[in-house]
Image (cartoon, rainbow, N blue to C red; front, side, top):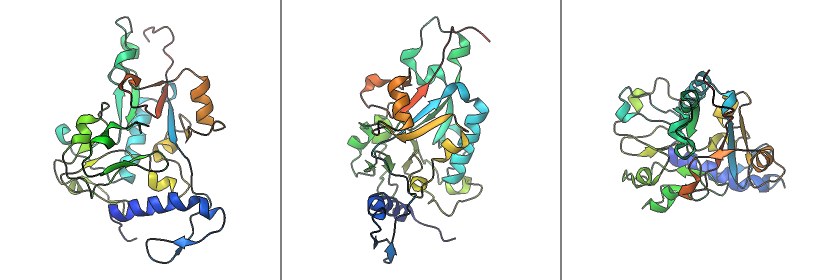
Length: 264
């Protein structure tokens, strides 16, 4: 299978998302290859994608499995030097993700509860505002995307992100990829990258790979659709988002049951 560049990938994703509504009417439009393109009927469409992670159902092993699948699909390098580590999804203890939720009385059991961490896909992303080249932007479906070809490596977005969700390629990442996935572009030294909610899979009617690997522990859907399962859950259940006081309005939510805080 031929490899595609990051630029081609972003054009394809944007074209597929934009033409999804036309496909329902059987309208043909021009694809990036110049031929007739019809968006697949099963292409996932949303105005505002969001995620709800049920932390009670995820173990550290589950999170590591999700990470392995995500990183393999997106050609994320496995760099041994932690200072140069690239992460799209990873495990963090509860107290590291939810500083404002941790009281002095909270037991070590809950402080160290393994949590899945990834880009929060904020409604009001600070990273987008500070990027001088529009290398990071929000698409029509509310997904914050990173165009590595536009990225000049200034790292303004990394400094602005209050969640530490972005990674910088201090070295050429390609030698650290065990098996390159030809369906997703690799990156070069000197650019930033992060989770993009598997926008390439959504364009094909597939769920993000972490959702599939979570085996029912993650809800994913349109937060702006009041009839969607995730919108109903967020509206009716006690769920939390990371540090809402920052004003970024994260769209990754967590269901956490801290009953009693007893030691295991």
